[in-house]
Length: 353
Ligand SMILES: Nc1ncnc2c1ncn2[C@@H]1O[C@H](COP(=O)(O)OP(=O)(O)OP(=O)(O)O)[C@@H](O)[C@H]1O
Image (tube, rainbow, N blue to C red; front, side, top):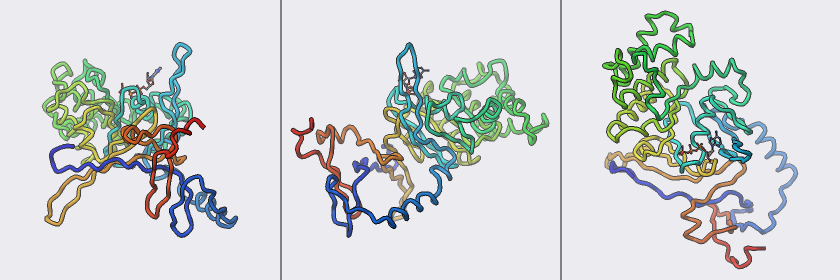
């Protein structure tokens, strides 16, 4: 973890489903649970039906998202039932091994690709049901996107200021109808992101970091709900990467924009409020960082790692945990008063049952 007082707590190795036991007595999975009364079942069903829908209060909601690619007759399941909720105003990172599905997810959220199955919505737009017209509006007004390759983000024959003005012209939004207003907004955004000095320069006259900060201004031009970035600091040295990440933070703090960044850069992953790890096309774990003040008034960032539990109650045990305890096919679950114990199978010889 970073040096500025950050503490990392280990991932939780708890697991999903165990029968609750009357009176809080530990119950081992495998024992028959006492059947619930009909009235109790009816109460539970009514509670679930009347409760808020999944992701109702979230800006981004992915529910059992699936994306299957077919190339040369071979199917690749890039997303395998991914669940993810992102609240309005979050600054978060997506991490994961190469091929885990991060870019696939980001392209879907950006409206550039369509999932095979599941549900996904951003800012009230249903990403599986948009017609061409609403998809265009969604991509212009609801999301901003920043690519890793600096050259892909800006038009080379326009200045930085003209690049920022362009999306406003294309969207033709009422509030920015006048040229003067658009020019003023471009100047304001470039100023907030610390690249006013590049306003009249073409991309070729700007450094990689300046180009990325101008690209963030372009992404923010139409005041989107969310800015998505795929490895935005991947081509930059660490000092420049820090400045670019600072620009995302500014957008988040000063403009209230929700920011989702795919990154391999550990310093970026350590600097956001929440880092979600994707493994094999599903969310596997997440690290949440909170600032805490101790009894001496000393501030420190406490990072806590959680395993994610999906909508069906499944979780992935961290690989290093399962390897450490030689967990292969099954575990014993015990429901305790306030936690669930996961134990390796005590009859491993019978694992081929
Ligand atoms: N258009 C496509 N056609 C076929 N397979 C694809 C396509 N796009 C992605 N995939 C496959 O889907 C899986 C997930 O790819 P994705 O690019 O989302 O991973 P990633 O986590 O972003 O990887 P990286 O960190 O290397 O960019 C990979 O196995 C990839 O080969």
